[in-house]
Amino acid sequence: MAQREKITDLIRAALGPGFALMTLLAIAGYAVLGPTGILAWGDYQAQLEMRGIELAKLESERAALKNRVQLLDPKGADPDLIGELLRKKVNVVHPDEIIVPLK
Image (cartoon, rainbow, N blue to C red):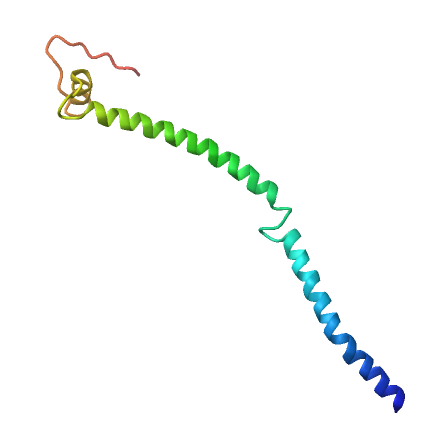
């Protein structure tokens, strides 16, 4: 009977630290293998590089569009751009112009 109580006390005494150890191991595993862990760092670096390239492309497109908007300003519109837009959108052509299809 005394032997059984010693074993039970030993198990009860080891239960708390054992649970704490298992919790720490789970947290450490998550820190290494989790979606935001150390092993995922390389993926984040690759995504950052790809997004940087995409950002540069979008910024250049934005600059081109900003320039085009400035050219369409009613106070100082560019006549060549207005003529180009009329030909594209309204299909307006002067009688002396020749249309050359690109296909």
